[in-house]
Image (cartoon, rainbow, N blue to C red; front, side, top):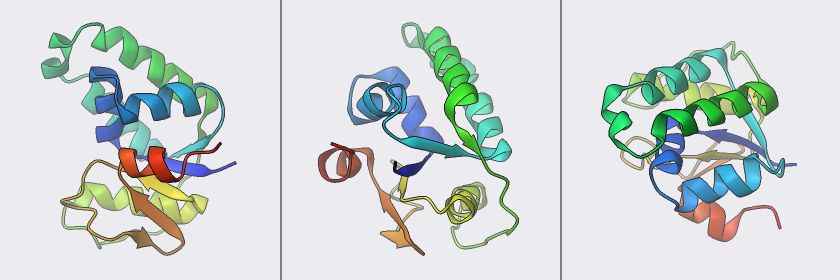
Length: 139
């Protein structure tokens, strides 16, 4: 099973509209076709970002966010990275690389192409939700 790290912006997108991030969460993660890898630091960021008041304007955002966070708590595999990296200019995004390295992720899925400018980190491919869905999703 593919080991995946999902950036927070992908989770937010999945809750706002039914596009590639939604398909990844709904058809792959919820259906146990991928193994989501998280760290306590990333889970904290998921909670912090998903609870921002600005997202409450989207229909059912809060209840859908609670559902996804519950599923992550039940199904995701928890890792605690033991290295600190300073590769990405947005310091908070380095935790994604640290986690990917620790769990030996196959993919990092992110919509943040401004900060994640490389196509891979060590053995982990870094792809957008669309790239992942169209080229790499499990069949």
